[in-house]
Amino acid sequence: MNLKAKVVERGYLLPFILITSLFFLWGIANDLTNPMVSAFKKVMRELTNFEAALVQLAFYGGYATMAIPAALFIRKYSYKAGILIGLALYAIGALLFYPAAANQQFGFFLASLYILTFGLAFLETTSNPFILSMGAKETSTRRLNLAQSFNPVGSLMGMLVAQLFVIKMLKSDDYTAEAYAALPEAEQMAIRTNDLDIISGPYIGLGLLVLVMFILVAISKMPKVQDEAGLSLKESFSILFKNKRYYEGVITQAFYVGAQIMCWTFIYQYVDNINESLPADQHLTATWYNMAAMIAFLTGRAVSTYLMKYINPAKLMFAFALAGIALTIGTIFIPGILGLYSLVGVSIAMSLMFPTIYGIALKNMGDEAKLGSAGLVMAIVGGALMPPLQGRILDIGGEAFNDMSYFGYIPEVNISFVLPLLCLVVVALYSYRSYRYHLNGDD
Image 1: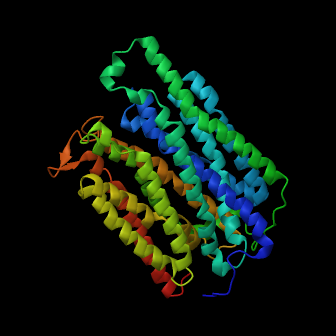
Image 2: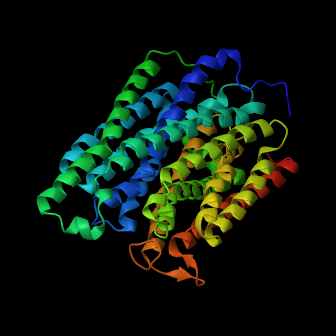
Image 3: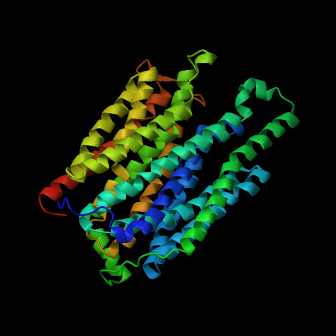
Protein backbone atom coordinates (compact mmCIF):
# COMPACT_ATOMS: atom_id res chain seq x y z
CA MET A 1 0.00 0.00 0.00
CA ASN A 2 1.38 3.39 -1.02
CA LEU A 3 1.23 5.53 2.14
CA LYS A 4 2.48 8.62 0.27
CA ALA A 5 -0.38 8.81 -2.23
CA LYS A 6 -2.65 11.76 -1.45
CA VAL A 7 -6.32 11.13 -0.78
CA VAL A 8 -7.27 14.31 -2.67
CA GLU A 9 -4.78 15.97 -4.98
CA ARG A 10 -4.72 19.77 -5.20
CA GLY A 11 -5.96 19.84 -8.79
CA TYR A 12 -9.14 18.01 -7.77
CA LEU A 13 -9.78 19.88 -4.53
CA LEU A 14 -12.53 22.31 -5.61
CA PRO A 15 -14.49 19.73 -7.68
CA PHE A 16 -14.11 17.28 -4.78
CA ILE A 17 -15.59 19.80 -2.34
CA LEU A 18 -18.52 20.58 -4.65
CA ILE A 19 -19.36 16.94 -5.35
CA THR A 20 -18.90 16.01 -1.69
CA SER A 21 -21.56 18.60 -0.80
CA LEU A 22 -24.01 16.41 -2.73
CA PHE A 23 -23.41 13.61 -0.22
CA PHE A 24 -24.56 16.08 2.44
CA LEU A 25 -27.70 16.90 0.43
CA TRP A 26 -28.91 13.35 -0.03
CA GLY A 27 -28.08 12.62 3.60
CA ILE A 28 -30.64 15.27 4.56
CA ALA A 29 -33.28 13.63 2.37
CA ASN A 30 -32.54 10.13 3.69
CA ASP A 31 -32.90 10.94 7.35
CA LEU A 32 -35.61 13.51 7.01
CA THR A 33 -37.62 10.67 5.46
CA ASN A 34 -36.88 7.86 7.95
CA PRO A 35 -39.00 9.42 10.76
CA MET A 36 -41.83 10.01 8.27
CA VAL A 37 -42.86 6.35 8.63
CA SER A 38 -43.80 7.13 12.21
CA ALA A 39 -45.14 10.62 11.38
CA PHE A 40 -47.54 9.44 8.65
CA LYS A 41 -48.75 6.65 10.94
CA LYS A 42 -49.65 9.24 13.57
CA VAL A 43 -51.32 11.69 11.17
CA MET A 44 -53.07 9.16 8.91
CA ARG A 45 -54.34 6.82 11.58
CA GLU A 46 -55.97 4.52 9.05
CA LEU A 47 -52.51 3.27 7.98
CA THR A 48 -51.10 -0.03 9.26
CA ASN A 49 -47.41 -0.38 10.18
CA PHE A 50 -46.88 -2.12 6.83
CA GLU A 51 -48.61 0.67 4.88
CA ALA A 52 -46.68 3.41 6.69
CA ALA A 53 -43.43 1.60 5.88
CA LEU A 54 -44.30 1.96 2.18
CA VAL A 55 -42.70 5.38 2.59
CA GLN A 56 -39.38 3.55 2.44
CA LEU A 57 -40.53 1.40 -0.49
CA ALA A 58 -41.32 4.56 -2.47
CA PHE A 59 -38.17 6.36 -1.34
CA TYR A 60 -35.65 3.60 -1.99
CA GLY A 61 -37.61 2.08 -4.86
CA GLY A 62 -36.72 5.15 -6.91
CA TYR A 63 -33.09 4.12 -6.75
CA ALA A 64 -33.84 0.72 -8.28
CA THR A 65 -35.92 2.27 -11.05
CA MET A 66 -33.51 4.98 -12.14
CA ALA A 67 -30.01 3.64 -11.44
CA ILE A 68 -29.52 1.87 -14.80
CA PRO A 69 -30.95 4.78 -16.86
CA ALA A 70 -28.66 7.11 -14.89
CA ALA A 71 -25.62 4.97 -15.65
CA LEU A 72 -26.47 4.80 -19.34
CA PHE A 73 -26.93 8.58 -19.39
CA ILE A 74 -23.55 9.40 -17.84
CA ARG A 75 -21.91 6.74 -20.00
CA LYS A 76 -23.13 8.60 -23.09
CA TYR A 77 -22.73 12.15 -21.80
CA SER A 78 -20.79 13.18 -18.68
CA TYR A 79 -20.70 13.10 -14.91
CA LYS A 80 -21.64 16.79 -14.76
CA ALA A 81 -24.72 16.25 -16.96
CA GLY A 82 -25.80 13.37 -14.72
CA ILE A 83 -25.43 15.51 -11.61
CA LEU A 84 -27.55 18.29 -13.12
CA ILE A 85 -30.33 15.86 -14.08
CA GLY A 86 -30.20 14.41 -10.58
CA LEU A 87 -30.50 17.79 -8.89
CA ALA A 88 -33.42 18.76 -11.14
CA LEU A 89 -35.37 15.57 -10.33
CA TYR A 90 -34.52 15.93 -6.63
CA ALA A 91 -35.96 19.47 -6.60
CA ILE A 92 -39.11 18.47 -8.53
CA GLY A 93 -39.89 15.57 -6.20
CA ALA A 94 -39.38 17.71 -3.09
CA LEU A 95 -41.53 20.57 -4.39
CA LEU A 96 -44.34 18.13 -5.27
CA PHE A 97 -44.95 17.83 -1.52
CA TYR A 98 -46.92 21.08 -1.80
CA PRO A 99 -49.72 19.64 -4.00
CA ALA A 100 -49.46 16.33 -2.09
CA ALA A 101 -50.34 18.09 1.16
CA ALA A 102 -53.16 19.98 -0.56
CA ASN A 103 -54.70 16.72 -1.83
CA GLN A 104 -54.11 14.84 1.46
CA GLN A 105 -53.55 11.57 -0.37
CA PHE A 106 -50.92 9.18 0.98
CA GLY A 107 -50.30 7.89 -2.54
CA PHE A 108 -49.43 11.40 -3.72
CA PHE A 109 -46.78 11.68 -1.01
CA LEU A 110 -45.37 8.30 -2.06
CA ALA A 111 -45.22 9.46 -5.69
CA SER A 112 -43.38 12.63 -4.67
CA LEU A 113 -40.80 10.61 -2.75
CA TYR A 114 -40.46 8.23 -5.69
CA ILE A 115 -39.63 11.10 -8.08
CA LEU A 116 -37.31 12.70 -5.54
CA THR A 117 -35.25 9.53 -5.41
CA PHE A 118 -35.03 9.43 -9.19
CA GLY A 119 -32.80 12.43 -8.60
CA LEU A 120 -30.91 10.77 -5.76
CA ALA A 121 -30.29 7.74 -7.99
CA PHE A 122 -28.69 10.01 -10.59
CA LEU A 123 -26.61 11.74 -7.93
CA GLU A 124 -25.35 8.56 -6.29
CA THR A 125 -24.73 6.73 -9.55
CA THR A 126 -22.71 9.72 -10.71
CA SER A 127 -20.99 11.03 -7.59
CA ASN A 128 -19.58 7.80 -6.18
CA PRO A 129 -17.53 6.73 -9.23
CA PHE A 130 -16.65 10.38 -9.90
CA ILE A 131 -15.09 10.63 -6.44
CA LEU A 132 -13.28 7.31 -6.97
CA SER A 133 -11.75 8.70 -10.17
CA MET A 134 -10.45 11.94 -8.59
CA GLY A 135 -6.91 10.83 -7.85
CA ALA A 136 -4.72 7.80 -7.22
CA LYS A 137 -6.27 4.35 -7.38
CA GLU A 138 -4.46 3.38 -4.18
CA THR A 139 -6.48 5.92 -2.20
CA SER A 140 -9.82 5.56 -4.02
CA THR A 141 -11.62 3.69 -1.23
CA ARG A 142 -10.27 6.10 1.41
CA ARG A 143 -11.34 9.04 -0.78
CA LEU A 144 -14.87 7.70 -1.08
CA ASN A 145 -15.01 7.10 2.68
CA LEU A 146 -13.92 10.71 3.20
CA ALA A 147 -16.62 12.04 0.87
CA GLN A 148 -19.20 9.74 2.41
CA SER A 149 -18.30 11.15 5.83
CA PHE A 150 -20.33 14.22 4.93
CA ASN A 151 -23.40 12.08 4.28
CA PRO A 152 -24.08 11.44 7.99
CA VAL A 153 -23.59 15.18 8.66
CA GLY A 154 -26.51 15.76 6.29
CA SER A 155 -28.34 12.92 7.98
CA LEU A 156 -27.96 14.62 11.34
CA MET A 157 -29.41 17.78 9.83
CA GLY A 158 -32.32 15.79 8.41
CA MET A 159 -33.03 14.19 11.79
CA LEU A 160 -32.86 17.53 13.58
CA VAL A 161 -35.27 19.13 11.11
CA ALA A 162 -37.60 16.12 11.40
CA GLN A 163 -37.66 16.36 15.19
CA LEU A 164 -37.92 20.13 15.63
CA PHE A 165 -40.06 21.05 12.65
CA VAL A 166 -42.16 17.92 12.09
CA ILE A 167 -42.48 15.38 14.91
CA LYS A 168 -42.50 17.94 17.73
CA MET A 169 -45.07 20.07 15.91
CA LEU A 170 -47.61 17.36 15.05
CA LYS A 171 -50.94 17.96 16.76
CA SER A 172 -52.03 14.38 16.02
CA ASP A 173 -49.50 13.15 18.56
CA ASP A 174 -51.29 15.03 21.35
CA TYR A 175 -54.25 12.61 21.30
CA THR A 176 -54.68 8.98 22.15
CA ALA A 177 -56.56 6.89 19.59
CA GLU A 178 -59.71 7.08 21.72
CA ALA A 179 -59.48 10.85 22.30
CA TYR A 180 -58.87 11.53 18.63
CA ALA A 181 -61.83 9.37 17.58
CA ALA A 182 -64.07 11.34 19.96
CA LEU A 183 -63.26 14.66 18.25
CA PRO A 184 -65.77 16.18 15.79
CA GLU A 185 -64.99 15.29 12.18
CA ALA A 186 -64.26 18.94 11.29
CA GLU A 187 -61.67 19.16 14.06
CA GLN A 188 -60.07 15.90 12.97
CA MET A 189 -59.81 17.26 9.43
CA ALA A 190 -58.25 20.53 10.67
CA ILE A 191 -55.62 18.59 12.64
CA ARG A 192 -54.89 16.38 9.63
CA THR A 193 -54.53 19.40 7.30
CA ASN A 194 -52.23 21.18 9.74
CA ASP A 195 -50.01 18.14 10.24
CA LEU A 196 -49.68 17.30 6.54
CA ASP A 197 -48.64 20.90 5.89
CA ILE A 198 -46.03 20.51 8.64
CA ILE A 199 -44.70 17.31 7.03
CA SER A 200 -44.45 18.93 3.59
CA GLY A 201 -42.73 22.14 4.77
CA PRO A 202 -39.14 20.83 5.13
CA TYR A 203 -39.31 19.07 1.75
CA ILE A 204 -40.40 22.27 0.02
CA GLY A 205 -37.53 24.16 1.65
CA LEU A 206 -35.12 21.39 0.65
CA GLY A 207 -36.35 21.59 -2.95
CA LEU A 208 -35.49 25.30 -3.06
CA LEU A 209 -32.02 24.62 -1.62
CA VAL A 210 -31.40 21.97 -4.27
CA LEU A 211 -32.29 24.47 -7.00
CA VAL A 212 -29.54 26.75 -5.68
CA MET A 213 -27.11 23.82 -5.81
CA PHE A 214 -28.20 23.14 -9.40
CA ILE A 215 -27.12 26.66 -10.37
CA LEU A 216 -23.74 26.33 -8.62
CA VAL A 217 -22.94 23.06 -10.39
CA ALA A 218 -24.13 24.41 -13.74
CA ILE A 219 -21.71 27.35 -13.65
CA SER A 220 -18.75 25.34 -12.27
CA LYS A 221 -16.07 23.63 -14.32
CA MET A 222 -15.72 19.92 -13.65
CA PRO A 223 -12.72 17.74 -14.57
CA LYS A 224 -13.22 15.38 -17.45
CA VAL A 225 -12.51 11.75 -16.63
CA GLN A 226 -10.72 9.88 -19.37
CA ASP A 227 -12.43 6.62 -20.22
CA GLU A 228 -10.06 3.70 -19.94
CA ALA A 229 -11.95 1.40 -22.27
CA GLY A 230 -14.32 1.92 -25.15
CA LEU A 231 -16.23 -1.31 -24.70
CA SER A 232 -19.76 -1.83 -25.95
CA LEU A 233 -22.66 -2.04 -23.53
CA LYS A 234 -22.92 -5.80 -24.11
CA GLU A 235 -19.22 -6.28 -23.39
CA SER A 236 -19.47 -4.16 -20.25
CA PHE A 237 -22.39 -6.22 -18.91
CA SER A 238 -20.48 -9.40 -19.71
CA ILE A 239 -17.47 -8.21 -17.72
CA LEU A 240 -19.63 -7.23 -14.76
CA PHE A 241 -21.54 -10.53 -14.65
CA LYS A 242 -18.28 -12.48 -14.69
CA ASN A 243 -16.79 -10.44 -11.84
CA LYS A 244 -17.64 -12.39 -8.71
CA ARG A 245 -16.38 -9.68 -6.39
CA TYR A 246 -18.68 -7.19 -8.14
CA TYR A 247 -21.97 -9.08 -8.26
CA GLU A 248 -21.52 -10.41 -4.74
CA GLY A 249 -20.92 -6.78 -3.76
CA VAL A 250 -24.23 -5.74 -5.31
CA ILE A 251 -26.08 -8.42 -3.35
CA THR A 252 -24.26 -7.47 -0.15
CA GLN A 253 -25.00 -3.79 -0.66
CA ALA A 254 -28.73 -4.55 -0.86
CA PHE A 255 -28.60 -6.36 2.48
CA TYR A 256 -26.45 -3.66 4.07
CA VAL A 257 -28.75 -0.81 3.04
CA GLY A 258 -31.71 -2.84 4.28
CA ALA A 259 -30.03 -3.18 7.69
CA GLN A 260 -29.18 0.51 7.86
CA ILE A 261 -32.65 1.74 6.96
CA MET A 262 -34.39 -0.69 9.30
CA CYS A 263 -32.19 0.31 12.25
CA TRP A 264 -32.71 4.02 11.61
CA THR A 265 -36.43 3.72 10.84
CA PHE A 266 -37.65 1.37 13.56
CA ILE A 267 -35.64 2.93 16.36
CA TYR A 268 -38.72 5.16 16.72
CA GLN A 269 -40.99 2.16 17.31
CA TYR A 270 -38.36 0.62 19.60
CA VAL A 271 -38.38 3.76 21.77
CA ASP A 272 -42.18 4.03 21.66
CA ASN A 273 -42.40 0.51 23.06
CA ILE A 274 -40.00 1.35 25.90
CA ASN A 275 -42.07 4.45 26.66
CA GLU A 276 -45.15 2.26 27.19
CA SER A 277 -43.65 1.12 30.53
CA LEU A 278 -42.44 4.58 31.63
CA PRO A 279 -44.31 7.46 33.30
CA ALA A 280 -45.18 10.28 30.90
CA ASP A 281 -42.60 12.62 32.41
CA GLN A 282 -39.85 10.05 31.81
CA HIS A 283 -40.61 9.31 28.17
CA LEU A 284 -37.60 9.04 25.87
CA THR A 285 -37.33 11.07 22.65
CA ALA A 286 -36.53 8.72 19.79
CA THR A 287 -34.95 11.40 17.61
CA TRP A 288 -32.23 12.12 20.17
CA TYR A 289 -31.27 8.44 20.17
CA ASN A 290 -31.39 8.34 16.39
CA MET A 291 -29.10 11.39 16.33
CA ALA A 292 -26.80 9.66 18.80
CA ALA A 293 -26.71 6.72 16.40
CA MET A 294 -25.80 9.07 13.56
CA ILE A 295 -23.04 10.73 15.60
CA ALA A 296 -21.72 7.25 16.37
CA PHE A 297 -21.95 6.48 12.65
CA LEU A 298 -20.05 9.64 11.75
CA THR A 299 -17.38 8.91 14.35
CA GLY A 300 -17.00 5.36 13.12
CA ARG A 301 -16.70 6.60 9.53
CA ALA A 302 -13.90 9.02 10.46
CA VAL A 303 -12.01 6.40 12.49
CA SER A 304 -12.36 3.70 9.84
CA THR A 305 -11.20 6.07 7.07
CA TYR A 306 -8.01 6.65 9.08
CA LEU A 307 -7.54 2.96 9.89
CA MET A 308 -7.77 2.02 6.21
CA LYS A 309 -4.42 3.68 5.76
CA TYR A 310 -2.96 0.72 7.66
CA ILE A 311 -5.57 -2.07 7.51
CA ASN A 312 -7.02 -3.74 4.42
CA PRO A 313 -10.58 -2.36 3.95
CA ALA A 314 -12.18 -5.80 3.62
CA LYS A 315 -10.47 -7.07 6.76
CA LEU A 316 -11.55 -3.98 8.70
CA MET A 317 -15.13 -4.31 7.47
CA PHE A 318 -15.21 -7.95 8.59
CA ALA A 319 -14.29 -6.89 12.14
CA PHE A 320 -16.94 -4.17 12.09
CA ALA A 321 -19.55 -6.62 10.77
CA LEU A 322 -18.89 -9.05 13.62
CA ALA A 323 -19.31 -6.19 16.09
CA GLY A 324 -22.58 -5.22 14.39
CA ILE A 325 -23.88 -8.79 14.66
CA ALA A 326 -23.12 -8.87 18.39
CA LEU A 327 -24.81 -5.50 18.98
CA THR A 328 -27.89 -6.50 17.00
CA ILE A 329 -28.23 -9.64 19.09
CA GLY A 330 -28.15 -7.33 22.11
CA THR A 331 -30.86 -5.18 20.54
CA ILE A 332 -33.09 -8.23 20.24
CA PHE A 333 -32.50 -10.02 23.52
CA ILE A 334 -31.70 -7.23 26.01
CA PRO A 335 -34.88 -5.47 27.15
CA GLY A 336 -35.30 -1.78 27.85
CA ILE A 337 -32.70 0.97 27.69
CA LEU A 338 -29.70 -1.37 27.39
CA GLY A 339 -31.20 -2.88 24.26
CA LEU A 340 -31.66 0.66 22.92
CA TYR A 341 -27.99 1.41 23.62
CA SER A 342 -27.10 -1.70 21.63
CA LEU A 343 -29.24 -0.47 18.75
CA VAL A 344 -27.46 2.90 18.79
CA GLY A 345 -24.13 1.09 18.83
CA VAL A 346 -24.96 -0.85 15.65
CA SER A 347 -24.43 2.40 13.74
CA ILE A 348 -20.72 2.41 14.61
CA ALA A 349 -20.41 -1.04 13.08
CA MET A 350 -22.30 0.01 9.95
CA SER A 351 -20.33 3.22 9.44
CA LEU A 352 -17.77 2.05 6.90
CA MET A 353 -19.89 -0.52 5.07
CA PHE A 354 -21.55 1.34 2.19
CA PRO A 355 -18.46 3.04 0.69
CA THR A 356 -16.22 0.07 1.45
CA ILE A 357 -18.51 -2.40 -0.32
CA TYR A 358 -18.70 0.13 -3.14
CA GLY A 359 -14.92 0.54 -3.38
CA ILE A 360 -14.20 -3.20 -3.22
CA ALA A 361 -16.84 -4.07 -5.81
CA LEU A 362 -15.65 -1.42 -8.32
CA LYS A 363 -11.92 -1.88 -7.80
CA ASN A 364 -9.89 -1.66 -11.04
CA MET A 365 -12.98 -1.42 -13.25
CA GLY A 366 -12.08 1.62 -15.32
CA ASP A 367 -14.95 2.75 -17.55
CA GLU A 368 -17.09 -0.17 -16.40
CA ALA A 369 -17.34 1.66 -13.05
CA LYS A 370 -20.05 3.85 -14.58
CA LEU A 371 -22.30 0.88 -15.30
CA GLY A 372 -21.10 -1.03 -12.26
CA SER A 373 -22.02 1.92 -10.09
CA ALA A 374 -25.61 1.61 -11.29
CA GLY A 375 -25.85 -1.94 -9.95
CA LEU A 376 -24.60 -0.83 -6.56
CA VAL A 377 -27.04 2.07 -6.50
CA MET A 378 -29.87 -0.26 -7.55
CA ALA A 379 -28.90 -2.34 -4.55
CA ILE A 380 -30.25 0.48 -2.39
CA VAL A 381 -33.60 -1.18 -3.15
CA GLY A 382 -32.78 -3.23 -0.05
CA GLY A 383 -33.87 -0.14 1.85
CA ALA A 384 -37.20 -0.30 0.02
CA LEU A 385 -37.96 -3.98 0.54
CA MET A 386 -36.74 -4.67 4.06
CA PRO A 387 -38.64 -2.04 6.14
CA PRO A 388 -42.10 -3.20 4.97
CA LEU A 389 -41.07 -6.76 5.91
CA GLN A 390 -40.12 -5.53 9.37
CA GLY A 391 -43.45 -3.70 9.48
CA ARG A 392 -45.17 -7.02 8.72
CA ILE A 393 -43.47 -8.58 11.72
CA LEU A 394 -44.75 -5.71 13.87
CA ASP A 395 -48.28 -6.30 12.54
CA ILE A 396 -48.32 -10.03 13.41
CA GLY A 397 -49.91 -9.50 16.81
CA GLY A 398 -51.65 -6.20 16.05
CA GLU A 399 -50.86 -2.57 15.33
CA ALA A 400 -49.03 -1.97 18.65
CA PHE A 401 -45.39 -2.89 19.21
CA ASN A 402 -45.80 -5.43 22.00
CA ASP A 403 -49.03 -7.26 21.16
CA MET A 404 -47.21 -10.54 21.63
CA SER A 405 -43.97 -11.71 23.24
CA TYR A 406 -41.39 -14.25 22.14
CA PHE A 407 -39.62 -16.58 24.57
CA GLY A 408 -41.84 -15.10 27.25
CA TYR A 409 -40.24 -11.66 27.42
CA ILE A 410 -39.08 -10.37 24.01
CA PRO A 411 -41.61 -7.93 22.45
CA GLU A 412 -42.32 -8.21 18.75
CA VAL A 413 -40.59 -4.89 18.01
CA ASN A 414 -37.36 -6.39 19.39
CA ILE A 415 -37.72 -9.66 17.52
CA SER A 416 -38.26 -7.73 14.27
CA PHE A 417 -34.58 -6.79 14.38
CA VAL A 418 -33.74 -10.34 13.35
CA LEU A 419 -33.93 -8.94 9.80
CA PRO A 420 -31.04 -6.46 10.28
CA LEU A 421 -29.15 -9.27 12.01
CA LEU A 422 -29.42 -11.51 8.95
CA CYS A 423 -28.35 -8.62 6.72
CA LEU A 424 -25.18 -8.01 8.74
CA VAL A 425 -24.33 -11.71 8.52
CA VAL A 426 -24.33 -11.32 4.73
CA VAL A 427 -21.96 -8.32 5.04
CA ALA A 428 -19.63 -10.36 7.25
CA LEU A 429 -19.50 -13.18 4.70
CA TYR A 430 -18.72 -10.78 1.83
CA SER A 431 -16.02 -9.06 3.87
CA TYR A 432 -14.38 -12.38 4.69
CA ARG A 433 -14.49 -13.57 1.08
CA SER A 434 -13.14 -10.27 -0.23
CA TYR A 435 -10.23 -10.32 2.18
CA ARG A 436 -9.36 -13.89 1.23
CA TYR A 437 -9.42 -12.96 -2.46
CA HIS A 438 -7.20 -9.98 -1.67
CA LEU A 439 -4.67 -12.21 0.05
CA ASN A 440 -4.67 -14.51 -2.96
CA GLY A 441 -4.11 -11.60 -5.34
CA ASP A 442 -7.61 -11.84 -6.87
CA ASP A 443 -8.43 -8.14 -6.74
